[in-house]
Length: 269
Picture 1 (cartoon, rainbow, N blue to C red):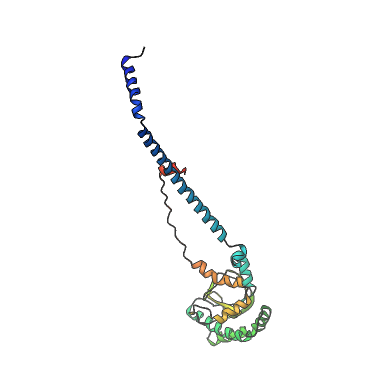
Picture 2 (cartoon, rainbow, N blue to C red):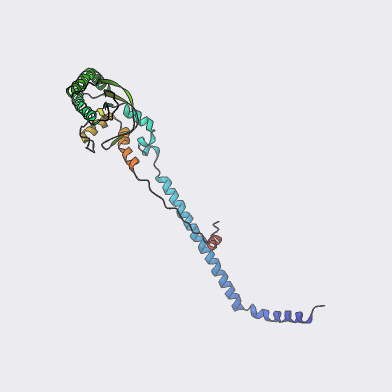
């Protein structure tokens, strides 16, 4: 048997139910439900539009990626291949002082000036590597005599060794051109113990200039180099300075804020 008080309360609630479910209240419930549904749909639409924009941007970025044939060849080739291509078309001059003393360094520059003057005349009308190599070899004995004469005139007894062969060079900046490290054919003039700082230039095609304060290789000299190298090889000489000296951009850590309510509505976990 049910309790009389409990039965009375149920009766009161049943009597009030029609008032609670009045048409006005039902209409308000319906309107609030529709508004909440529209709100969720709005969030969903915003999320969908954002995804479409991201997809479009990714598609555009993909389309803007250059094909292999659009990328400069010096970027496709390896550094070793570029260095070998450059080395196959130039001959360097390498003058090494007896020591790092001020007098030995000054003597080195005196020898250098006379050798360059002599070789520039000898190579004036030479246009290919084979002829340049042959002409340099034919001048080797005369170059050694010139160097020995200058050394003796300045009061030294240093010996001079002149040779043409392969030598390893580290990266060398010459004006606004950067030559990669590697093996190069070079006319090497070693004074005495050859333990001092060295001086070098590109002997063929002639890029030797004596003013070491000059920061830019003359355009005429660059044109000579361009005719000896491929477009890609020459471009790599000028590109090296730009790439190696370019500052590395710093990136601030990306901070993302997540709203739990937004994630719940948009389904973004």
